[in-house]
Structures are given as structure tokens and as C-alpha cells.
Image (cartoon, each protein chain N blue to C red):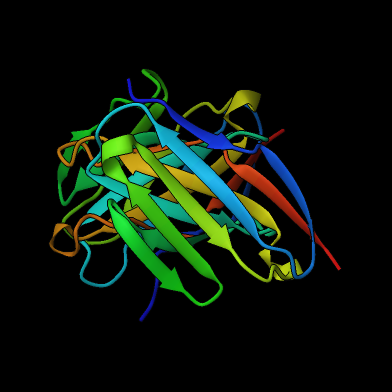
Length: 110
Length: 114
């Protein structure tokens, strides 16, 4: 089956710093989503981005489908950005099955 | 707009009891998905349902687990005769294919089996 790998697994930043999280996938996908799981366990939708670039405030994402990777950029990080960031891909729209990466755990220190 | 609703948020069951987890999709969404997150792990797909139909249950354990999404009411994930290994966070998501299949997640139900 399709493999989804995220890097780095862990990241510690000082407040105000920028970061880039990466998601590699092993096959063509129909859909790619980025999520933030906050310390309370809730999954927040960040981006739905099967291709191209999107921006939302301090966050932006780019997916290069032909090269099978996606990047999530966090600028001017804040302590509230702490948590786990997941990338998930939809391999086939017939199944609806999102395949999740293992996540990047981000800690932003004040 | 109300998001995906799940209840209960926390559920404690003794070994051998039954657990019923409920999910109400976002308004206008007709597709429901269940995922499980074991401690310190990512989310794993369990089942994909439309109203009165199971579309893909390839991630469901073969025994003790079942899911339904009736014509009226919420989707139900049922776990019979729970064991300690069932302790996990269970997330429900919903989507509408007309919106490109983006899945929106509920807050999850944290099941603890004692």
C-alpha cells in the first residue's frame, strides 16, 4: 500500500522562529490534507491541498504532486502552534480511506 | 455551522462490556468515516459509510467491531466484549463528495477499558 512519511519526527522551536515540515508519499494521490492535533487531542483541519500552494495566516502549504511531496510552512511560531502535525493522503476516492503519516511533534518554547 | 459531533467524549468500560460510540456528521454531509488512534500512534482508518451502506470496512477488526449509519440518526461504532487493547481515541470524520472529499473530524471519543 501507499506509504506516507513525515519529517522531522520531532521539532523544538523558540517562539518567533520559522519551520518547514515535510510529507513524502509513495504513489499518486487524489487528496492531501494537513491537520494539527492540539494538546487536547482535537484534530484541526489546516489545508486540503492535492496540488499547488495555499496560505492561511502564518501557515502555508505546497504540494508537488508529480514529485510526491508536500510541505507545511509555519512562520513566526507561537506557543499555541505546539502539538502534532499530520499529513494524510487519499489514495483512491472510491474508498475514502485517508492514510496518515506518523506526524511531526512540534514544541514551541516561549 | 455545527461541526462533526461525537459522544460521549470519554467512555470507561470494564473488560467484556460493550462500547457504543456515536457520530453526527456535519450538516449536509452524507459520508462518515471512523478512525482509531492508539496511544502514541497516528490515526488508522477503520470504516467508511454512507447512509445505510458500508462502502469500505477494510480497516475494521474482523471480530467484535461493527459500524452502521442508518437512514435517520447518528452513525454508531459498536465494540462488543471490549479488551484492554481497545483503549484508544476513536475519531469520526465526515465529508461531502461535492466538496472534493475533504474530511472534517470530530473531537473524538476516548475509550478506556479497565
